[in-house]
Length: 313
Ligand code: CMP
Image (cartoon, rainbow, N blue to C red; front, side, top):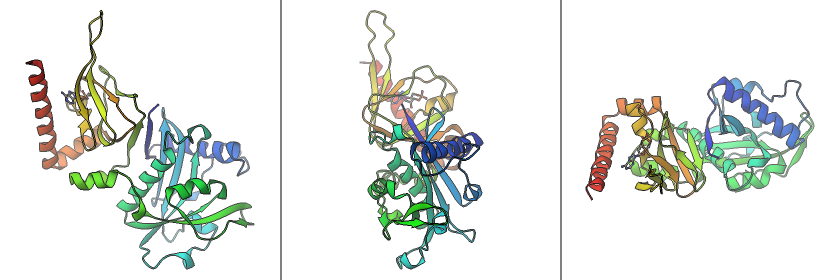
């Protein structure tokens, strides 16, 4: 069951998120009282300084985290706590994290959804030059936010205005440890930092099905995938492995360039983290950057040469 993590863009994604917040905060955690329309949404969701990072399974939002860059309109965590005396002297631009939610069934560590939601949120912050993220959290999720690197500023307290328990926390974006930023530095592909769209597959899951129509290409961030041609011999199909691809390598580009069905199967050989390039994003990268165009051409030529070499043996 692949997990997609991205910044919510469509009305359907945002609406699904608002309903999921309600399911988690009201029904699963009992942290809030029910809202008549079954959704949780407030003014910060409408600001252009806000990004809602969502985790999707089959187009349904199963989790999310909201980041709001500091502005004169305020930030959600400030409504519960005055952070001004707690910010270190090296604080640059600030943001607030809020409305973290994750459906109970997806809290298992195998999916690492919480970590990955936070990582995408961190890229968004780093891209905007934000150094510190504040949060006023429900103390019940402190174990999780500590694991993500958030640090407590005080002991938990009761906020009488909103009638909730609050734990104020701070997080430094520079402390993020993950494979993505080292990878884009190594490849020199700094525009990848603007891509907040990722897909996560567990070992053995199929990523691309031979013969399907395709609308996305992928770059491996972490893990390894196998590119296979399925056998068509009824007495014993023999699958031929054409390649194994690892961090920094691109696949799924042929369907976008040719408008033809997928030429192979692609399967996760390990738990795999992929950057997703939608057709339009991929085409724009090629059009805007001759160096990128040349790299992709060279890669396709090499794979063609390998395949021809393979057939000649
Ligand atoms: P696409 O046809 O869209 O989906 C399957 C992908 O497998 C294809 O794009 C390529 O990215 C990749 N692929 C196909 N043939 C090879 C090959 N010989 N070596 C490596 N990758 C390949």
